[in-house]
Length: 360
Image (cartoon, rainbow, N blue to C red; front, side, top):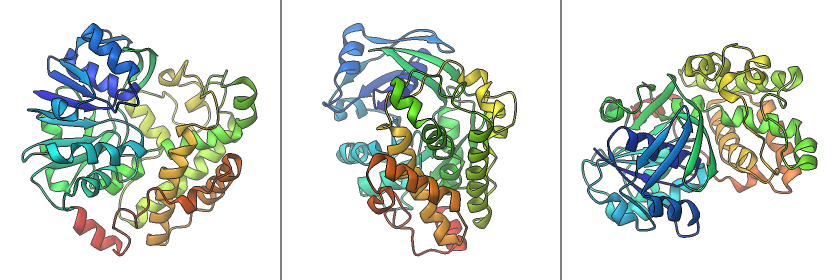
């Protein structure tokens, strides 16, 4: 299989390494404003990994030419934060061809629909199959350019859905060798809601804001950042997320339960479940508040979930309060920016029943 990976960050390098170590030909693309990892990988001819992923995986191409990366590809992984999805799609647009599978990993909040919109593909087009995962299949950090440390490769509980969802089985079959953790979701609203980053990251960040600023992130994000009070906030947010899913007829698995299935956690609670989780051990906090844990997980994730909640008449007072507090701390208005909403995806006019049929 020939694999193209878009994105040279932690996740992109993990996906590229994993596909490469499984014997697939991998080509890695990154935009020119992010040259460091690409240069290192191109010079060495591959990516080094330690931890749950270990060894050296050859990378056939690493550079800034998206056409070279996509040439002859069977599968494309678009790996990055929510704000990278549209630029990736726009770059890929001239090179997409019938039969290609694109997986937005993770979709974060309707990432597959964002990709289709930006690439000029009709929502129900099946010539190019576009799918998304609910989360990145790894806990991973960059040690140095071209070298990663994988704290965990998820064992199960990574939901995936294509748009339309009828193509989900084909996506799973194509990449099952590398990702046996994939499970089919009903549709991309379920993958979006099953992404718990907007539930966890902002809560822990805001309740540890002073310590993060004072120490430059010199603390262990989960081990030291999650206490019983922090856990109660995460639980309240998670209940709202589950309630949104219920309005859509979707089962959203509570995050601690899913964390146990994935291999992150051994205790399905909202406090010690995180603080004592083997899969989170050693992960450091961000160095400042100006980070994707707020800019992405609030600005895209929570804002999207709130827009979906309003559409299906679900109450989300804790999400609203958290988003407002994050806006105050960052001196911006995430809700007004509306980076990713049901309206921006072109889905605001549909009832829950219509959405189910449209995305099936």
